[in-house]
Image 1: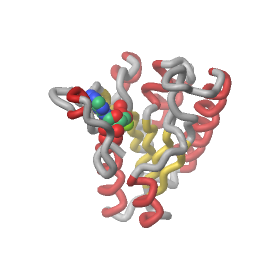
Image 2: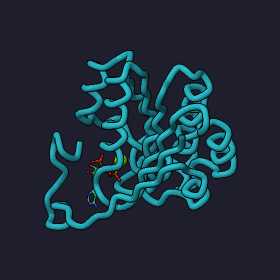
Image 3: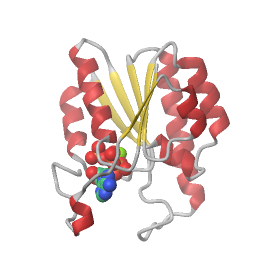
Image 4: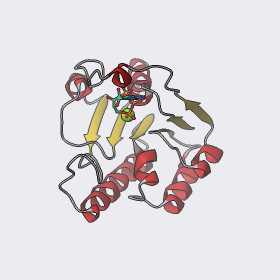
Length: 172
Ligand code: ATP
Ligand code: MG
């Protein structure tokens, strides 16, 4: 099954983490490949250490792309995204996992770091075999059409809009 969690509100990555927790509880294995996200620490980076080898997070991004003092040329972001996609494909093909999460892959596609056609074809082939979850805002219309389950998280209210910065244990 292909599950997409998209939209501009908070709750996409945390929803995927919750899904992984559920899979692990049922005796399965889950893995999360993170696109875009840089090396900075989030609470789940510690939790996954406690859950290995049942659940693991693989960080594959270089951080913000083209904004907020991004020090890398675009080619570096493309290379990172392609490498992460290659590893995620191997995990899906291995059939070792009951759930493979592609965190922020929607954003990697939106930014053009990955091409939609090969991603679409691969997911089309495997979504009936492995549960795959794709997160990130602005999900591609072709993936939305292909998916079995699509949820949109809508931003109704967020402290950020009142100038409140990211909080440890909530945003990261
Ligand atoms: P989370 O990881 O908390 O589930 P998310 O995956 O839905 O969030 P992203 O688009 O990945 O959201 O955003 C990354 C960061 O921005 C997270 O720290 C998240 O809490 C925060 N965030 C999400 N939505 C909003 C919003 N509408 N306004 C401000 N910040 C947001
Ligand atoms: Mg996220």
